[in-house]
Image (cartoon, rainbow, N blue to C red; front, side, top):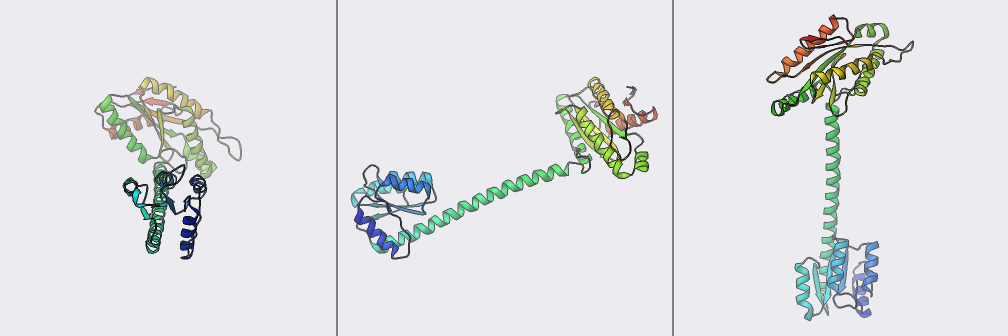
Length: 314
């Protein structure tokens, strides 16, 4: 309660504490505001006519600090126009005219405290809902990320490759933006598994995946585990000339990488087929053509790339 008249403060305090309410009183509105900033109350009753600041201004500041706090204004009949304006502006919820009626006082206090409780509960539920919504959004994003990734290598998976390839072909049809596809297969991978075991085979797959990422271009190339020991690379905004340079780097990176084993370090190579997407080409036919070039590279001696319809050795 805020009022510059001591007898009003103590009379209100006595009546409300007699009904079981906990009451703090202030004869200085500025001291009341300082206390309120540190520990907002669920309800504040303020006299309108006080030195330094009028009650409507005080309650407007209270509203800015803690909107959930209920606000009652004490006033005389001569101030009713000001009070009604304050109510219409939302600064005041209820008002009491001096001398007040105890029954009206208690009814207003109980109603306002319940209103404040419900507001606080409502805002708490909104905050919890926002937190849960943010958590779910993050969880969904993580699920989408996991659904697009290969568990072993961390590369994008075949499903994501198919989505990205279709998207890239639509972009090509619209903007004629060139792109290339490379299909890569680890040479003699079955022999690695048969000789060293599947755990070492898995380590080879992960090492190759890391080499791909290190050798290629950020924000241009995307890497996918296509299946087994076969990988795919989408090279955006890239012609065959640019793809050739990228694949030279890739072959060198794989050729010089070392896979740690219980014995001596293991080296592996890859064979690659590559092609540039052509207007009007079906994506399935494009992939099949690049895959055929890959197996041409295998037959030509491995550790090399072959461009669709144009075999090239590094």
